[in-house]
Image (cartoon, rainbow, N blue to C red):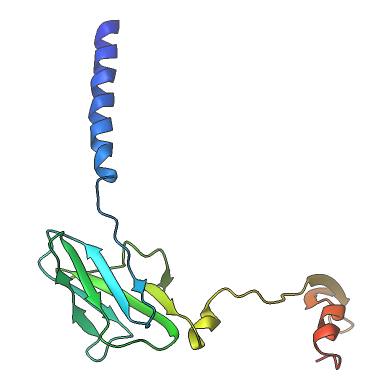
Length: 170
């Protein structure tokens, strides 16, 4: 009985290890790729797909463009003109099914939808990026209220840091 259990465990481990191998044999796809001239290339590995489209706020009406398939089964689309500095959202449509870009970790969640996003920097788009700016310190202060006869907790920036940036106090 003991030999049978060991044999079964050995067989199961061989079965699961071969199933794991497919995770690393897929082709890595870079999407979106922002070029130096602010054009953007989108890619999706879907060798069995029949039709792949992209929808996004950077496209002209009707806000849909078709991707083309290369020999490796990777679908590609490059914007025809450079994009202005901004935060853009997009989704991919594979055979009629709308998805986010699996190669892009950045996304925005709306009330009922999720979209992939990318930022073209160098202007308005820099406002969406994480920038190194002074943040100050917040303190928690207890305020007595003569009207409601209870206390209130409020947060305010430390006064010294405000005065450094604005000596008038506003």
